[in-house]
Amino acid sequence: MSNDERNLRSAFDGFGGELLGSVRGMAKGHVDQAFSEGFDAAASLCVNLVAKTIADLMAKISSGVLLSNDEQILAGKLTDLKAEMEQQLRALKLPMVE
Image (tube, rainbow, N blue to C red; front, top):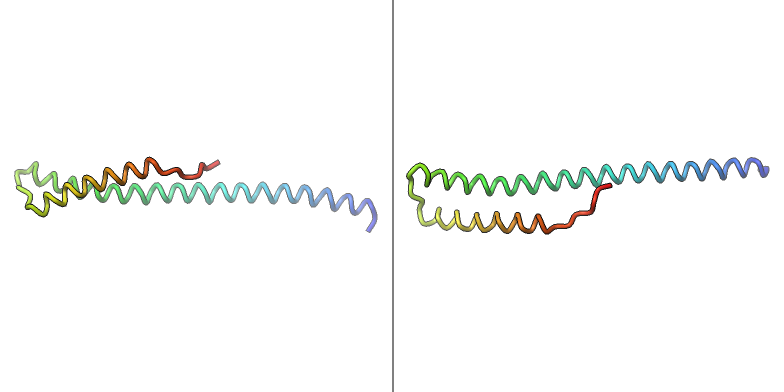
């Protein structure tokens, strides 16, 4: 192989390496963004399910129906659980998406 061929190959390898690195970086960014969006959606789903159950129990009270002792305990525990979930989710530090 001549020097010219080596220089050309070296220049192409450098460009190809940069291009490959750029493509890998973009792909990682898309994966990170998809993970972050999926995590947010799953966390919201969980908190919203707990919130809906609390709201259903509070709706019974608003309609004049007395909650049973078990329902009262459940409402209190779910309210505490929802607050704890929200606090921990706010405190969670996820990697920043570029």
